[in-house]
Length: 349
Picture (cartoon, rainbow, N blue to C red):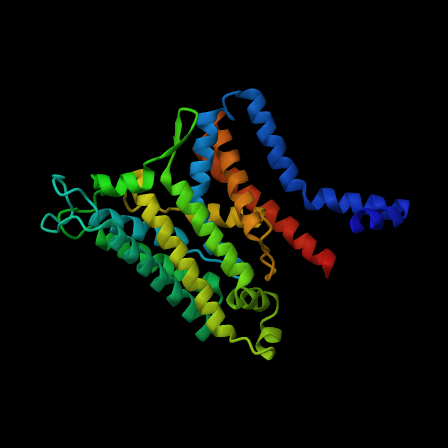
């Protein structure tokens, strides 16, 4: 009601300016929603039951990594190593969870491990690399772009070396244990006749936990304070360096979860697993209103950004748009989203 009253109190010129700003600030959402409507008109099966489940599943698979990168962006940074961490975790998880009787098993003498133990290993790998990113950023006052670019190359090199040990010789890792794949990709609920994968529900639980961390804990409040103004946060008694380290550590855990899910979801893991995943995550976070200016972002915005991005790319596939062209479209979306975000900041300033 307050917003309506303020609108009524505006002059005609102020109302025009307000409407203009509203349209510009939300133009990307308008464009994406319009694109969805057009795609549905051209291809009526786009929003059919199976397609909706596919979009939900793809969104759920990408949500943890987007939430992780969103935290780095809130600190006015980014994380270019996210995709490669996902790839490393996926390959390690797959290698430890190959079926015992699989003829091309990477470690023939290693029995299939319990998938919950491997899950903890996945969290540890992602978390440790994330903590290293945060430590280097905080301790040496380096920009996260430089730190995570370096880590990206290091992790990728480590992944290539890992794929060449045992009997694998750099080949894709497949033949996963059924208990693992059924835990991730199995289903106990269906939409019509289309099963909803289990990892969708795991992703929802993870998102709820992240919402609690961001909004209800001292750590979450400190994260936004550091992102808004590091000097002011430091003067207020916030341990800025510790917050930075923990934010990147938490992001690494999110990448570990993504990698563990991804290994079972795609079934065949190689050095290409995780390639450019960070670009999708950054695009989704920025579309969802997480600002590179720092200190601005909401969980619901990240969810919206992930879903909208999946809608667009699934729609482009329905329209048979070339996969290479999709990279161009993705880049343009990121560019426009960042431009709109910066314009909002300049208006506020």
